Image (cartoon, rainbow, N blue to C red; front, side, top):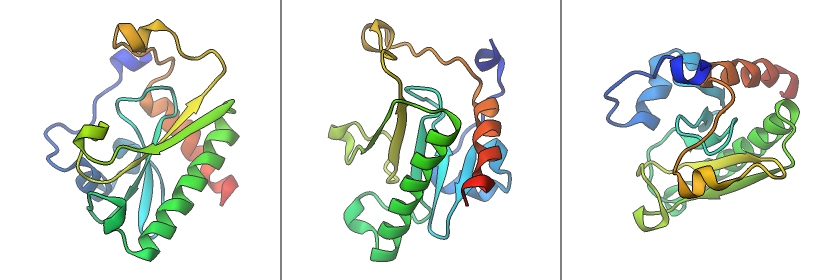
Length: 154
Protein backbone atom coordinates (compact mmCIF):
# COMPACT_ATOMS: atom_id res chain seq x y z
CA UNK A 1 0.00 0.00 0.00
CA UNK A 2 2.89 2.34 0.72
CA UNK A 3 4.01 2.01 -2.93
CA UNK A 4 0.51 2.44 -4.34
CA UNK A 5 -0.18 5.52 -2.23
CA UNK A 6 3.26 7.10 -2.65
CA UNK A 7 3.33 10.47 -4.45
CA UNK A 8 4.57 10.37 -8.03
CA UNK A 9 7.48 12.44 -9.31
CA UNK A 10 7.00 15.74 -11.09
CA UNK A 11 4.74 15.26 -14.08
CA UNK A 12 5.47 16.13 -17.70
CA UNK A 13 9.25 15.88 -17.70
CA UNK A 14 10.40 15.93 -21.29
CA UNK A 15 13.98 14.79 -20.62
CA UNK A 16 13.91 13.19 -17.15
CA UNK A 17 17.59 12.23 -16.92
CA UNK A 18 18.57 15.83 -17.64
CA UNK A 19 15.77 17.56 -15.74
CA UNK A 20 15.69 15.48 -12.53
CA UNK A 21 19.26 16.35 -11.44
CA UNK A 22 18.42 20.04 -11.94
CA UNK A 23 15.45 19.94 -9.54
CA UNK A 24 17.68 20.66 -6.57
CA UNK A 25 15.92 18.01 -4.47
CA UNK A 26 17.59 14.63 -4.71
CA UNK A 27 14.92 12.91 -2.60
CA UNK A 28 12.13 14.05 -4.94
CA UNK A 29 14.28 13.12 -7.92
CA UNK A 30 15.25 9.81 -6.23
CA UNK A 31 18.95 10.48 -6.90
CA UNK A 32 20.89 8.50 -4.29
CA UNK A 33 24.44 9.54 -5.24
CA UNK A 34 26.23 12.05 -7.47
CA UNK A 35 29.75 11.85 -8.79
CA UNK A 36 31.42 14.55 -10.90
CA UNK A 37 30.12 13.25 -14.26
CA UNK A 38 27.28 10.84 -13.46
CA UNK A 39 24.72 9.85 -10.84
CA UNK A 40 22.70 6.96 -9.42
CA UNK A 41 18.91 7.19 -9.38
CA UNK A 42 16.22 4.75 -8.33
CA UNK A 43 14.31 3.43 -11.32
CA UNK A 44 10.72 4.68 -11.13
CA UNK A 45 9.55 1.53 -12.90
CA UNK A 46 11.74 -1.07 -11.18
CA UNK A 47 12.02 -4.77 -11.93
CA UNK A 48 12.99 -5.41 -8.30
CA UNK A 49 13.22 -3.28 -5.14
CA UNK A 50 16.37 -1.14 -5.22
CA UNK A 51 16.66 -1.15 -9.05
CA UNK A 52 19.16 1.64 -9.74
CA UNK A 53 20.10 3.48 -12.91
CA UNK A 54 23.61 4.85 -13.51
CA UNK A 55 23.32 7.94 -15.69
CA UNK A 56 25.89 10.36 -17.12
CA UNK A 57 24.96 14.01 -16.57
CA UNK A 58 25.74 14.83 -20.20
CA UNK A 59 22.98 13.60 -22.49
CA UNK A 60 24.36 11.01 -24.90
CA UNK A 61 22.71 8.06 -26.63
CA UNK A 62 25.48 5.49 -26.70
CA UNK A 63 28.53 4.36 -24.78
CA UNK A 64 30.60 5.34 -27.82
CA UNK A 65 29.54 8.97 -27.30
CA UNK A 66 31.08 9.20 -23.81
CA UNK A 67 34.49 10.76 -23.32
CA UNK A 68 37.12 8.60 -21.57
CA UNK A 69 36.64 10.50 -18.26
CA UNK A 70 32.85 10.06 -18.53
CA UNK A 71 33.25 6.31 -19.18
CA UNK A 72 35.54 5.96 -16.17
CA UNK A 73 33.22 7.98 -13.94
CA UNK A 74 30.13 6.04 -15.05
CA UNK A 75 31.88 2.72 -14.32
CA UNK A 76 32.89 3.99 -10.87
CA UNK A 77 29.27 4.98 -10.26
CA UNK A 78 28.14 1.48 -11.26
CA UNK A 79 30.67 -0.04 -8.85
CA UNK A 80 29.52 2.34 -6.10
CA UNK A 81 25.92 1.30 -6.80
CA UNK A 82 26.89 -2.36 -6.50
CA UNK A 83 28.54 -1.68 -3.11
CA UNK A 84 25.51 0.31 -1.97
CA UNK A 85 23.04 -2.41 -2.93
CA UNK A 86 25.13 -5.09 -1.22
CA UNK A 87 25.43 -2.99 1.95
CA UNK A 88 21.74 -2.10 2.23
CA UNK A 89 19.74 -4.87 0.54
CA UNK A 90 22.17 -7.81 0.64
CA UNK A 91 21.04 -9.33 -2.66
CA UNK A 92 22.27 -12.73 -3.82
CA UNK A 93 23.34 -11.13 -7.12
CA UNK A 94 22.99 -8.03 -9.30
CA UNK A 95 22.20 -7.78 -12.99
CA UNK A 96 24.13 -4.91 -14.63
CA UNK A 97 23.43 -3.87 -18.19
CA UNK A 98 22.59 -1.29 -20.86
CA UNK A 99 19.80 -1.32 -23.44
CA UNK A 100 21.47 0.42 -26.38
CA UNK A 101 18.88 1.52 -28.93
CA UNK A 102 15.13 0.99 -29.15
CA UNK A 103 15.50 -2.50 -30.65
CA UNK A 104 17.41 -3.51 -27.51
CA UNK A 105 14.64 -2.22 -25.25
CA UNK A 106 15.93 1.31 -24.65
CA UNK A 107 12.87 3.42 -23.82
CA UNK A 108 14.72 6.67 -23.05
CA UNK A 109 17.38 7.89 -25.49
CA UNK A 110 19.61 9.28 -22.70
CA UNK A 111 22.17 6.56 -21.97
CA UNK A 112 21.71 4.76 -18.65
CA UNK A 113 22.86 1.51 -17.11
CA UNK A 114 20.69 -0.74 -14.95
CA UNK A 115 21.68 -2.29 -11.62
CA UNK A 116 18.98 -4.79 -10.66
CA UNK A 117 19.37 -6.53 -7.30
CA UNK A 118 18.42 -10.21 -7.45
CA UNK A 119 17.58 -12.79 -4.82
CA UNK A 120 17.43 -16.54 -5.30
CA UNK A 121 13.86 -17.36 -6.30
CA UNK A 122 12.81 -13.71 -6.72
CA UNK A 123 11.23 -14.15 -10.14
CA UNK A 124 7.89 -15.77 -10.72
CA UNK A 125 5.18 -15.68 -13.35
CA UNK A 126 3.93 -12.16 -12.42
CA UNK A 127 6.50 -10.07 -14.36
CA UNK A 128 6.76 -12.61 -17.17
CA UNK A 129 3.12 -13.40 -17.94
CA UNK A 130 1.16 -10.71 -16.15
CA UNK A 131 3.51 -7.82 -16.91
CA UNK A 132 3.02 -6.91 -13.24
CA UNK A 133 5.71 -6.18 -10.70
CA UNK A 134 5.43 -6.74 -6.97
CA UNK A 135 7.32 -4.16 -4.90
CA UNK A 136 7.29 -4.41 -1.12
CA UNK A 137 8.43 -0.84 -0.39
CA UNK A 138 7.65 2.68 -1.65
CA UNK A 139 10.38 4.29 -3.74
CA UNK A 140 10.79 7.14 -1.24
CA UNK A 141 11.30 4.65 1.63
CA UNK A 142 13.89 2.80 -0.47
CA UNK A 143 15.60 6.13 -1.24
CA UNK A 144 15.79 6.86 2.50
CA UNK A 145 17.47 3.50 3.15
CA UNK A 146 20.00 3.83 0.33
CA UNK A 147 20.79 7.53 0.91
CA UNK A 148 21.43 6.88 4.60
CA UNK A 149 24.09 4.31 3.70
CA UNK A 150 25.94 6.47 1.15
CA UNK A 151 28.17 8.30 3.69
CA UNK A 152 29.34 5.00 5.18
CA UNK A 153 30.64 3.89 1.76
CA UNK A 154 32.45 7.08 0.74
